[in-house]
Length: 319
Image (cartoon, rainbow, N blue to C red; front, top):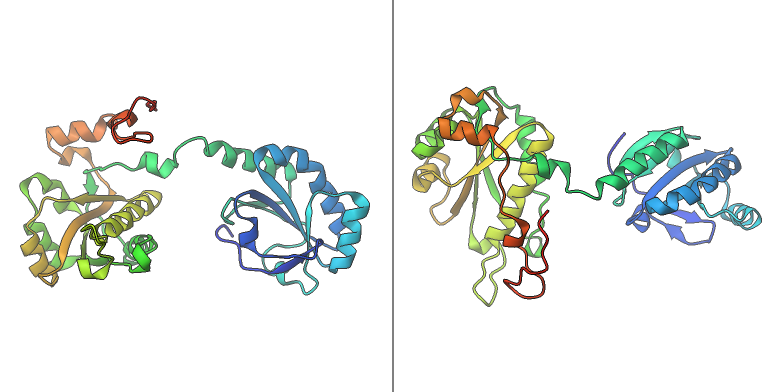
């Protein structure tokens, strides 16, 4: 299993109660000792000098009561954190003798039995922190789409990812409509000529909202647009991870799309998100084909980032 670690509340050898959240911020190499706790704790303690430079700690879950673990820790001088689990709750997650590697927010990123493999996996994760998330690097506004249908569960997963976005006071102002079939044909008819390529998409998501669904601040800011933008960003990253293209567009007749999808007039139709699998570039115009196959173009970082004062770009280095 790879994903968030299950919740637990176990007492440490120090007597304090530890929850998964208490371990956040560092990588964690966590093992289940069972009856072999001393041997496993001794092995992981020997790895501490290698774990520390990688900003990681070692934790062992044992079946022994807290006093026994406290005595072991004091006698052996171990630096590993020992957690007491006499009722075997942790055994539902990690078998005796097994190791799991947690990232900085408690996500299981590796499991196995070889400490050397665990260290290698940890080193890879730590190294990846030196760059931008690879899914962000991979995401592009591709236009070449295959018309193959996208399963409903996959489309639902995209919206589920969007729905995890932060919002002002957790108001969650986004409202999505997924257009397929006849509804999709009506949406396609409302697209601008420049978005001809989007008519090959098997699904188009409409994102609408209303200023009353989110915070309205004293300086005239309506926060719903920002919240919906963040939701769209998460949706696009989820799509990239799933091997899909999610391309937001602004070129369409908003009144026609609202009528086609039954969106109330008082709502703002913020964007349409074109979703599909990668397709053949021959379906694109010469202009779009060149963009599709060409290098990714972004403004230099110095054009968008200032330090301490708006427009002060002197301290910004392009990357």
